[in-house]
Image (cartoon, rainbow, N blue to C red; front, side, top):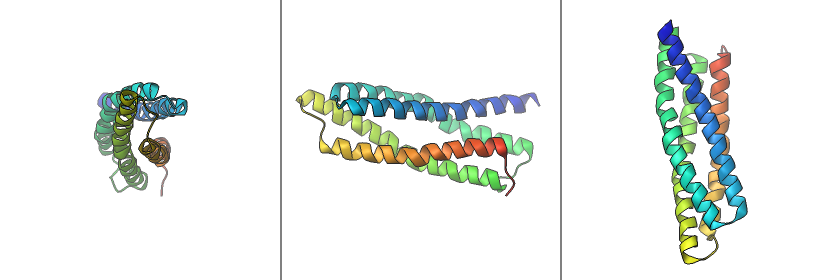
Length: 156
């Protein structure tokens, strides 16, 4: 039972990291974006990209490992309704998150180029930011739903 609780704690921490890092990154990028200041945006995007690689990537790797171990130890087959839905939502999250990370890196480079050239942000920045913003909604909603499924374990 001790191992199960240790893995469960790691899994809950991973979920908290995904939610917290996702919300934090979104907040700071949005606040920087609203300034329209390429220097601030470039700086914020550098930190956001680092945070995504250090925290989010670690949690993204750990979650299926700890979740799979917990499901196995608790006797929940992967085709159990809430487990299968959690896995599907995890894929949705990943399909949104991967382009978001690339977009964040591109936003950073565009802001840095604007700083170097002493110019305002280019139109490409605004287009990419809109895509980044839109992709955040299904990703974050999916993570919230996964957490709810983990806690409620609904039968369906």
